[in-house]
Amino acid sequence: MAKSKKLKIIPLGGLDEIGKNMTVFEYGNEIILVDCGMAFPDDDMPGVDIVLNDISYLEKNYQKIKGIFLTHGHEDHIGGLPYFLKAINVPVYGTRLTISLVEHKLKEHNILSRCNLVRTKPGTVVKAGQHFTIEFINTNHSIADSAALAIKTPLGTVVHMGDFKIDTTPIVGKVIDLARLGELGNRGVLALMSDSTNVERPGYAMSEMTVGTKFNEIFENCKKRIIVATFASNIFRVQQIINAAVTNGRKVAISGRSMENIVEISILLGYIKIPEGVLIPLDNIKKYRPSQVCIITTGSQGEPMSALTRMAFSDHKTVELTKNDLIILSATPIPGNEKSVSNVINELFKIGAEVIYSSLADVHVSGHACQEELKLILSLVKPKYFIPVHGEHRHLVLHKELAQKVGIPEQNNFILHNGAVLELDKQSAKITGEVPSGKVLVDGLGVGDVGNVVLRDRKILSEDGLIIVIATISHKTLELLAQPDVISRGFVYVKEAENLIDGIKYVANEAMEKSLARKHCDWNTMKSSLRSSVSKYIYEKTERNPMILPIIEEI
Image 1 (cartoon, rainbow, N blue to C red):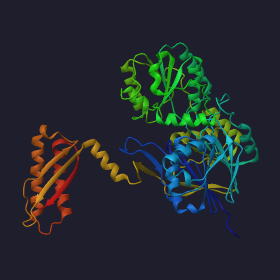
Image 2: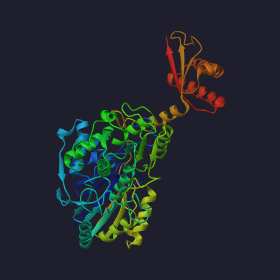
Image 3: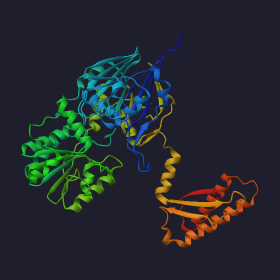
Image 4: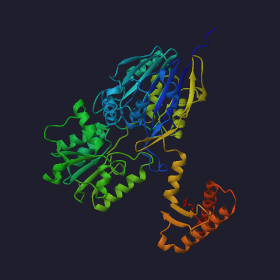
């Protein structure tokens, strides 16, 4: 009797972290992928620009891949696509705004012409290979055209919710299609994968419309110039800022490259509507009184090069902040960005500007479902197996506990880690192994050429600096021609630490003479001895461990 095939679910990113979401679904000799995201570097990754998933498993199995299916257009779900498609060119499916944002990214990487992008809409059903059928289902999130995916396989249907909330008064589009999710649940769902980001929050996420009401209140009574920082991708928020500006007779200017790009795309697609004459170039803001202007900008996360950060530190070429400005931060800090945001807020206060942020007023609502919404989805979909996704480890554990409260047995809940292989058949589900997963670091044009050793060296350089020891020996006599020279970078200022530098030279001289006294001493041994002696001396004198770089010249 032939062995029955099993469905494999393999998350490559997005678990025990916020970012680089990517999940593999494999049945027989076919694979589909859900999302292809990126993450921003941690503090212990100096110099790194972005973080991608390790796709070595997919590179080995590239002939099996039938397509990538995108839930929405946020960077943690689409940001890895340009790099992925350079290595593995497969069809990409997504809704209108999602694909438009992907097009813009691929154009920047000069690969758009050779990529196959397919626009879908809620209700679209795509046949991918012999074994997979994927249906797009309308959801609500902090970006338009978000979708859940119903993935039909020979063993049953898996529902992947993507990022979602239940917003009964959305700014653009329809309410999440709970009816369709309920239909799927009544027919039988093998597994549910659901967003865990806000599982710690009780109740329901507030509607996006409540922010618009608050904006109107602020704009109505304000005589200052208003600057609002928010996520560029949150076009609902941008539309509400524009609405408040129009209602109160203000012109609108856009600042920040990503904001300019997304607003342009959204206007073309009809997601953002601006009356004629309201939108003005940023360079023209000085032609109007402060009470006639509203600037929508990037920088709500305190990013070092963002428009708001440059304004706060008086480094913006067009906008100079004064005490006659009101700045609204319409976002909450992503975990890890709290310090950067706090620094920007403090700088804004130093300028004397008025600052409103989420701690002071309801100028932001989350795009992720809270506990009651998560329980409602679990109750509607009624999955046999539940897999919490999109969250740090505590989020996954708490979501699993929530699922047990609504009746899913503990043994049917699976907390996975990146790379884990969950195998399902009609009778059972179990973790059977793992595939390579991890972080690929992008630094400038280099992809994957910065590894643990390079990061360790960068960390040492950033914390303790560098000492270069240069020794010159005679080619004929193999003797030192002079006392070794010492160069310090980021360790001590040489002129103020002459005794320490002289001590290093003395120790280096002794180490070199000992090495040269030995017969058949090779260069590597000589360098190692020199490095070890100098490092030991510096630690004894300073309790610091700078990087020691020995250079031996032979003339």
